[in-house]
Amino acid sequence: MKSTQVLANRFVVAACLFAILGLQWSASAQSRPALAEVRAIKGSPTYTTNGSGAMLLKVGAMLSSGATIKTGADSTVDLFLGFNTGVIRIGENSLLALDKLAVTDTGVDTAVEVQLNLPEGDLYFNVNKLSKASRYEIKMPNGVAGIRGTKGSFSFRPAGGLRPPVVLLEGKLVFVYAPAGGQPVSYIMSAPPAVYFSVTEGVKEAPPALLRDVERQLREVERRAARNNPPLRPVGESLLEPPMSPGTGAPARRSLGQVPGQ
Figure 1 (cartoon, rainbow, N blue to C red):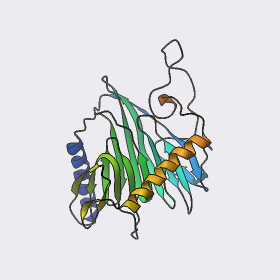
Figure 2: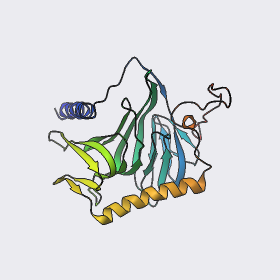
Figure 3: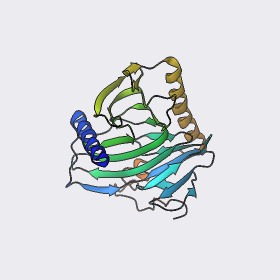
Figure 4: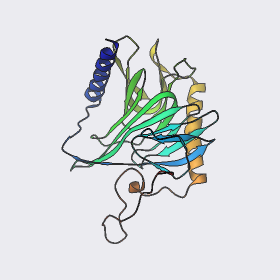
């Protein structure tokens, strides 16, 4: 009975997100796998791919759907998902699964599909404005968020934590809160001013200290990427379309590389 209720809640959560965001995902469109690039790391984070043994993560690694990243104390990972899709930071003592990374040519534009799963830890995001056909979701044990072009953070700690589940600095997102044993409830969040979601009070204006902390994390992502990496590659070098050969307009032939150890 419990598993049936969980599945029902997940269905309701997904239906709410699609209805509120007005998403239209074409099953007939040609979808292809995409990659996320590790732009910077701190400490000694590890990763697994589709049940493989844990391996040390390195800057420059290209991760695909099925990869799961784990950070320890005083450890972070910054991922670049493409110019349109932006960057994310995985905080310390966190676990993040890349459930799906894909790009689809709809015939009208190029849409991205990103599904991330955060069973434990902190995630900071800076996502550019997405096309209407794109889908960007972050799942946590207590809910799912759909984002369209926003900046903020997500957090979940099984034993409870000081950080709110959702903090939004800019833009708009929908968070469908699914409490254990309860019915999902959807919240539409917009900023500025910066807001956060409270499980007891709903959406509230974020206090200055919380705002500064999330901003600090996102500024550090930018600084570390600029210091540790060459200039950002063209869109196709990580998540989106393949880069074009100079003077021809045709896709360039190149290897995106592999995750270290594969």
